[in-house]
Length: 368
Image: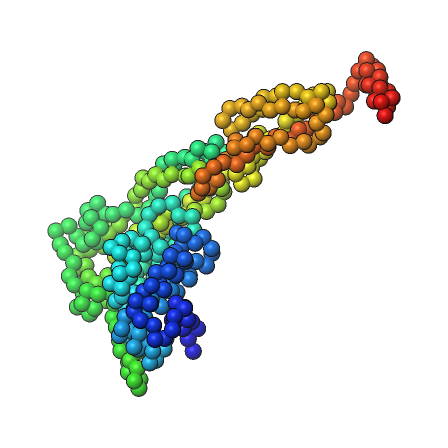
């Protein structure tokens, strides 16, 4: 029994809904759950679910099969690739000519510094391995952002065959088993239903073409060991964690490139402690400065700032310097800097100091 939700329930429409109603409802839900807009952890899965429902219900033939046989009828007749690619024109009606770029970015084939995990439709294409890069940055880098230049060891295009895998001067031939599709489909009828199984072609290993004379340098893989020069921008306000740059991992011939996972660690600072966009600094002052008050100059991320210690300040008094913290990640504005007053109490005093303090103590008691 299928665990999928009813497609009409997913879109929140009646079974007699018109194509215009289906399109309108999908557009509304797509905007709501688009992972670039909705940052909740399950937004991407919701987007995938409503897109699958729309792909079926916006196609009159698939909708008729679904209305008659439910999920079993659709899943038995169509692969996931068939469901989505067969409804491409319907998605273009909703998203316009940028349909491809929208889904490439969402499903793991786009570029850019990603703050979240991508996924793909699962059209059966192989995916290259992810690469991992570790870097440490300073609190000053968090303040300003940083351009990171890196050199990644990874497979690159073979210099002899230009990535084809075939010996120079030769070409590949179309696989006669799958006719260049890279997939072999087998059908099995049962009652009123036809079940279709789609598997990668074993003869050409899913490539659709066969190399008759492999390249001697890369042994037919189309790749060789090399280094990939790459640069990316670490945005201001970033926190320690893992970030994904889509499509910058290992490439896969006729498939999907893996991602580059950047693991960022923000170094500890010798003066400041961080809490989100706010920073904290401890300023040591004497007892007399706390009693009498004083104007001080304290360190800041961008030089120094002046503060005023009011007379009679107590231990651990906090003074806020507005807007002198770190940028808020992904939005405007900055946090604040907080200065905590740490009052130093001397462990040893001389005779004269003791006499002065005792005199001061007596005067306080007389006032009480």
